[in-house]
Amino acid sequence: MVTYKIPVIAGDGIGPEVIAEGKKVLEAVAEVDGFNIEWIDYPHGAEHYLATGELISEDTLKELKKYKAIYLGALGDPRVEPGILELGILLKIRFYMDEYVNLRPVKLYEGVPTPLKDKKPSDIQFFVIRENTEDFYIGLGGNVKKGKTRHNLELVRELYNVRFGLDIESGADEIAYQLGVISKQGARRVIEYAFEFAKKHNKSKVTSVDKANVLTHVYSLWRRTVEEVAKNYPNIKYEFAFVDATAMWFVKNPEWYEVVVTPNLFGDILTDLGAMIQGGLGFAPGGNINPKGTSMFEPIHGSAPKYKGLNKANPIATILAGCLLLEDIGLERSALKVERAVEEVLREGKVKTYDFGGNSKTSEVGDAIAKKVKEL
Image (tube, rainbow, N blue to C red; front, side):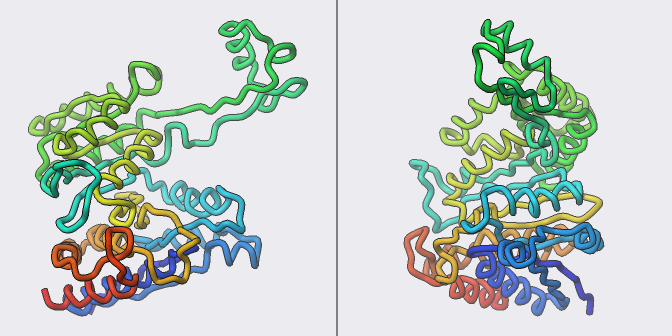
């Protein structure tokens, strides 16, 4: 019997509770389909940081890199300043593993309410593929202040003077800047992933989202790369769309989309909108993917500290993230079985957490889905 070793970072807040249900369901499908899962638990998160001062070490990152997939709960704790855990653990892993694809299924399941009037599950079924390592999230930026210039960015001083007629020493207290960077290589690999994904999943169209009409330097390169890649996929149509228009169309006509590919910043925003139209963050899984290396799978919701220990949070996003994990390690049939179990439980509507009109406990949802997996 094959054993799959999977590192787990349960993290903070509701993370351990939802991860426990994800494990439960994946163990159920492993039992049914005849394989084993060996969980390798890591302590990283707020408690570990507060006790030791460590976020995540180089040695731990090297260990994690030995595995194909990581299962993550959530990070964030009110006792720790915002950004420390997220940057020091989550983004550190993403960049270290070069997880350049962020995969977000946007799918409305039967039995789950959507805020969109008259839309049904057949209308909301698409994927957002977000570039995950470049754009405005690379950390290049700083501040220019009176009497002190950090990063010595004289160009910023000059541009501010030309545009507004003000000099930093006389008219402006402070200027802040953030640089977005897109490389040809970085754009190409995620765009190729999107077209390959469309091909594998029998999708006929890829929509590329940017803001090339205003941010011309970075996103004209993105568009040129889409056009170059698309030539290798003559059976897949492609189109360009601006991010503001796409946000409107996600709400007005979500049925238009099949596969969306977008740079990092816009993908971050659009995927939260996607989560809302599919019924909420409790149904939104995500994958941080390196197709040839180590990937990480998680619910896209946060740690929700106020619900910690209440056995109240919706674990379905975490369970669906487990589906993505199974698919990534080559267990596509098992992944489909878990998703089908989720669909059946939601369709029956007997077990529902507070966020979509019920009062079931986190563990009860996990129990119901695990049971359904075995019945299938």
